[in-house]
Length: 509
Image (cartoon, rainbow, N blue to C red; front, side, top):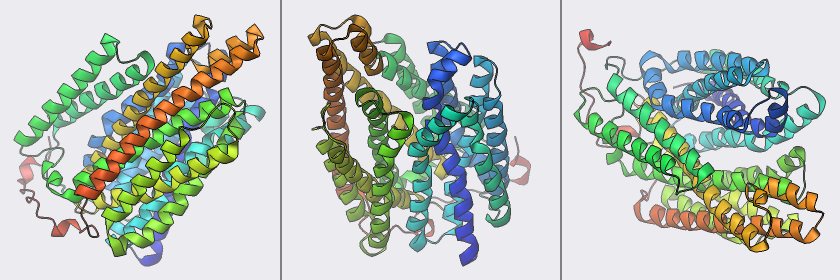
């Protein structure tokens, strides 16, 4: 166990790493219009700038956790940070769409290692009593990149060339490498287990197909056959992965982890919270920019109440959870999240920011109450030997939950928006997106058409928030029924099947 001072410095190092990932997730959206012109990128290219990152991230999460357990988490983190920095520089100086897509895939691979191993290290260096507080800092750092991306990216695009939005990762990466090298202790899991090659192949193929299919559903709707076939193929591959894990003598994922209620329901509830959070963060920038006419920098400022609420909620939850346990805290958090989302359904095109800030802040408070204690309940069920691959599993489920959230809520929003456009009798071009609809209405010079586009979007957003709110209500019920009613126990107290030792000759493939 690290010393009292060094483990908090280590947390700072890991938080720097996750800020870089959070920034990268949102700064690209600000640069897309510029990239379309400077790189002559097609609409398909623009989609692949995002998709290449997400698919590699999904494919590598589980193997990254296992490799960190085997070869050393600190060593893998340092390598991943270096890769993330090099890929960021490659993004900045890309001269074609193909180069940028390849560099974005490199970023996804670096992020896939950083995400599970940084949370795995927290399990090793922090005792359960301090872990919720540490997770609060880590999650807040991850989320901080969401409003910072448009803020910093918008300012850089106003003053420099588009590649500068990727160069902002480099100072964070350099600081992260130095801090990890100085303060993060090396840790391993079970180094004698064989590498589960079929498990890696099945999980990677299944997560890629599932994530890609969900992204396509978000773009094309639930009636497009290719999207549904891809989702079904992903689900079938994941089912095959589970069956293989039951048969394998050295599985990639120890399914006995799911015998722990803390791990199972902590992971499920963190995934449900991610569903609501990313669905919300998908809709709000469109509201602020396309409907209300703010620039990227102003949009980032208006997203800050999410962070403020999350930090306040997490601080209170961190004090309550050690005394009350995860169940009442997470249940309250999911209820607050639901209340914020359902209140947001009253937002209209002319709603003032004061009202929006109130329900967005309430949503953030709910996330702060729900997310860190839920993840702590899951991580608390992991032994130090299993923390890498277990954290990878938690992050993989959260990643898929986020993608599903964006796809489902995006589809609901688009369906309601297009309904409103059709009823208003606007040209078909206005159906593509609210940004296009505003442009079409502006060209028509008809204030009534512009108001119809804005109303159609806020009606669609209200429907999407209603769906997200219902999911959060379901999360509150599940937390109240199934989450352990006392503070999460460490793995040593959870009766999981022991990992059988492997002969030295079988320690490599």
